[in-house]
Image (cartoon, rainbow, N blue to C red; front, top):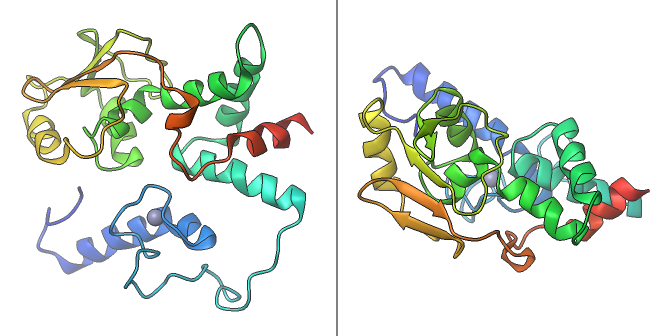
Length: 218
Ligand SMILES: [Zn+2]
């Protein structure tokens, strides 16, 4: 998204560095969390090994605790949220009726920033967060600038095209890729309806949510 804004080569380098930092965790797990083609772990890229001085040496087998923690970190990095926010999503999932894993997943996947990313309006979770905090996103026609806002079934997320024509144009070109079945997309009007809550089997395959629950339950 932040490419070719300026012809200054320093700008391009900085952008690339920032992008690389976001994918540092991908290098640790050996695959891209977001399946982003610009990630260093994608085949053909040079830096598919973990970052740091020991990155190229043999990978040490993680202890059970370490393995659980890694699963937790995957979720945290994917949604780009703090440890506290993730713990809160778990704590909320644990109370009341219903299955904890499913509610935990929904507390993450129904975040406004995650929806803006997953429906294709933004190319990365980071760009999605920024679109929300900068006031470009509407829920049921009203501005919501809180990325942690939980979108409910039936609510409509849209881009404020009047206020943000450039953002809207960009979204039109990036949207339309693999979109989860629980969305109904109106690309002409840049509207995305959450028609139903996501199911646990619609998790991005990379995650083992049971391990994360085990991590927190310890
Ligand atoms: Zn990556």
